[in-house]
Image (cartoon, rainbow, N blue to C red):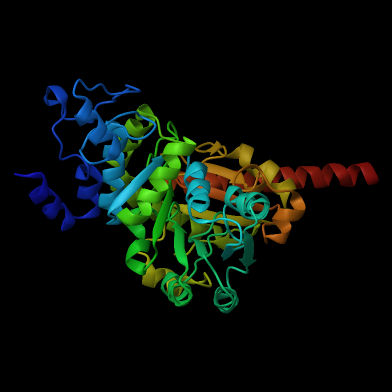
Length: 416
């Protein structure tokens, strides 16, 4: 069967099948069934004319791994299969992908419209680095589609969206905002890291460029860093050129690990988001929890939008603890089946407050201005048994109450 016929069949296949087979319809050396790690920095040619043609892109092949690499190329093909994109470009980290794609299309005098509820690193690019380039940035209230549309109408070169947002899990109506952006000729970019390609297809909703921190759910094992950008070949040619010259290329070993992780993406997400829904529902019953953020809850303010544009609600949950950071410091160390770490999307469950994870780069004042309280805790739900994760939370909350009573009794004795 030819590669073209295989690709045609894959276009009709389910996401689980595409996670495994997209980009893999190539003949590997030595008849290997798995993608090899090609660690060569350069590729040699005896025929100077052939070398020149490959260097110009007039013939297939590889010249130098900063520009392209056989292992990395298979990863790029795999994300294209999952996002139904024409082309993709891999980067060394998620932030390299985010910043590079913004720098590719923005220059002095351009204007960006986005929301306040973006990942902390992205927010720093908007607030600190783009203004140095003479790029105007307007960050709107995420829940106000009317405000975002009004700002777009004033003139906009790039509309940057993140949905669900990190860490407040807010949802924006992608189709509605794309329509506003297209009226003024703006390029629309969307960070699809939280949703993953299994739950959301931004290109099908009209977005031009989709971005992933491949370190997270795509890799799934917290052992590799990478970023991916995908879209039309015309747009990706510009992004690829920027990467070639600025050098934030993905190394082949990390590409191999991400490829390996992506093959189990469908299985992992199925378990993770099932547990996330159950955990979110449990947290609603916990007296020490003031608010729960999860788009799968009917009480979520944008639940209807999420139902319309997503196929699943993802594996991320956040909640706000009564007592703020004081309670966070007591609760998290009590958990038995969790890492307290600044990552997400792994097979293990991970907890962390925004001030040490998503918005560690921001000051307290900046976080509060973004609507992120000190009591907010983010959960990246892993693949453990659902009942065990809920029981773990229950015992941790019970321990918090016990410690609180002991502290109260101690204080009462001291004041008598």
